[in-house]
Length: 431
Image (cartoon, rainbow, N blue to C red; front, side, top):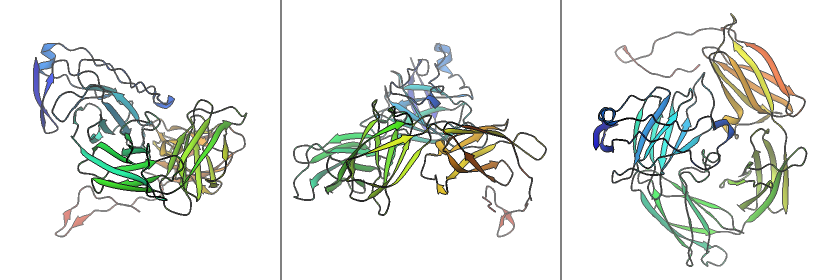
């Protein structure tokens, strides 16, 4: 038995049990910080309930993913990115998998709005922004467009066989920790150096990245359906990430960014022995960033790509604790953010590493602090921001600031109008 209903401007046919099946979490590894946000099992419903879909609790988001022909998309990946909001927890992006009827359901865990992306090769992804709890989504995948091209050796104009080709909507996937394969389409060049990728967004610009051992990585946008890559000789840099005792750190993430010239970022991940291979580096100095759960990030400048190998040591992350309060001692929600370490900005680090949302009780805990002087910004709702220098003496140290008190400061009130004294609603005011 099927039921037809309209959702988000689409009329679709769903099985009676479309939202009745529990889900299994995606089988890839999930960061510890997001393991508590596993897909919620959907309650069983009968025929009567299916005729009138039950309301979704405000603490959950449910939906169905459809193929371009309207059939359920089984085993599709559905990714969620929390939008920052004062007073809510900070969580890493996470991915779940649809059941055999294309359905999914997740707990919001206090997040007010999330961006949602559904992906199933060979189709283009379906995207919905600013989704809040209590919504029932219909995410219909698009047929997508085909991107093809060839890869040749710039030194001799011969085709490069077996080069790795990736199609994605970003340079660095925000879902890399939750699922490194999510929303990335991969292929290898054939004996003539040619490749075909399906599932590019028909309306936007996707990125195609080509890597081959011994050559510099190249990236192009899909401005045309046929791309041509000429790879120049490059370097492959091996290395190892360990802790202060010399023990290997698995699943550490590394990024290599050119310092003096523009160029694609190269990423790598350590295995169980802490070793990594960064493929396709150019003959220029790089800034290397290494991060791992429970450790303070490490930044290394002026790393030459032509050296034999590098070793990176990560120290245990120091943590900052405290409570934000107003001038009357009442708890204050907001954000705590690490600005710099020893005078060097940390803006290139992921936001979830260097910031923490402060809930209504005003209590905060910020990790990723390193030994030395850390400049920390405190932003309280309705108050001017504060900055404090936090000195960390030892790796893994816990620094308790107690109460961070905000002063009321000055208030500015006004009215925004256009010609004819017509009020302007929703205007953004900065001071």
